[in-house]
Picture 1: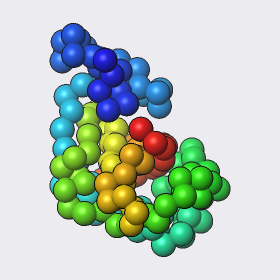
Picture 2: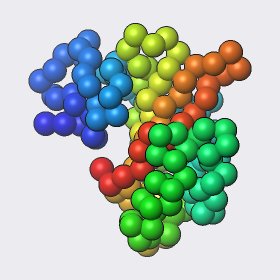
Picture 3: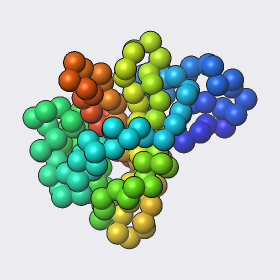
Picture 4: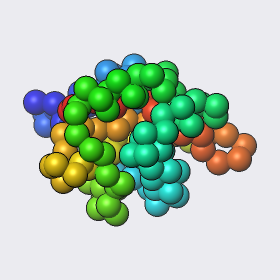
Length: 143
């Protein structure tokens, strides 16, 4: 049985790795979103909430999805996005990417005015750089 969109099953030992749909090889040491990542992720969500999708393109935060893909996903979802409450980060999942020291995968549940916590999830990567981490959206979808 998959766990929150990742391929770990209850029968798999925690030491094993698996492929997520994003194509990253994942380490399964999952945890809440680390504190240093919360501000930058909140900033990305703020741009989504404000409909400022193009603001995420110049520095690459829109990732492979791109501003047009993000806009489409929000429009198709058809609800009003809200900023993330603090508990979104505790409810999220994060883990280090196996074989890529310092790189992380992150999944954060989204909130809407109509639903509160929704079934829409924001997936990101945090790539280690000399100046910290560079955050990129890898997907925005219903989980």
